[in-house]
Length: 278
Figure 1 (cartoon, one colour):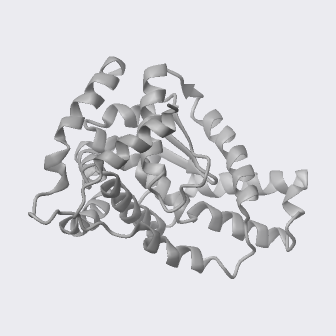
Figure 2 (cartoon, rainbow, N blue to C red):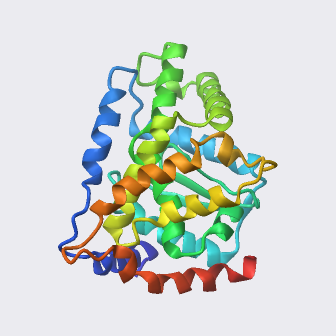
């Protein structure tokens, strides 16, 4: 059985019947409609830009951590989330950036990166799933695609083949990196990714507060000297925690028991996998 097939089995077994899950597909509809008046970015185009951006992301973060056990683990968790996202048809790729900086980055077309530092910061599997789900949500909601659409408009590419020009392609990739890597995404996009990511997380069966617990601990441990790009390209961490807190009461089963209580045993697997990199 392939790794993807194995994950499908695990995810299907992990779903809790009777839980009131938010429909993650409905959550992204508004965001996708918002970009409909701009020059469209087709699937082939999105994946092509995403691949070029991914190469630059890896270079800017010092390469990849290729520890086999960790790479396999991150991919298993990531694929479990991806197949239950609003865009399961994308060819998702998950990788670990070789830096102790705490961050996670996504690129158009299904490319998701977590830094070694962020992986170390996770104390439970739900926290790892939470940060990956947030990045998958960015892709599902087309947040990066909106940047590409704006750049296409500036380049006045009105037809479906103009992006295949080497010069135009390079200009748009450079423009995307300058915008996305230095400024990050709009705050509303980040809050939306938290909301959609939390819904995906719960839908698969991990504790829905996985991202929330990680963000809360990062906020508590931040110092004035911290220079991680994470804080400069994301909204105030406390504000993100508060917004997720408002969502969590909706993620309970019929008996009123939070999903976290049913999946605490998954914590041990993360500690075992990443213990040797601490």
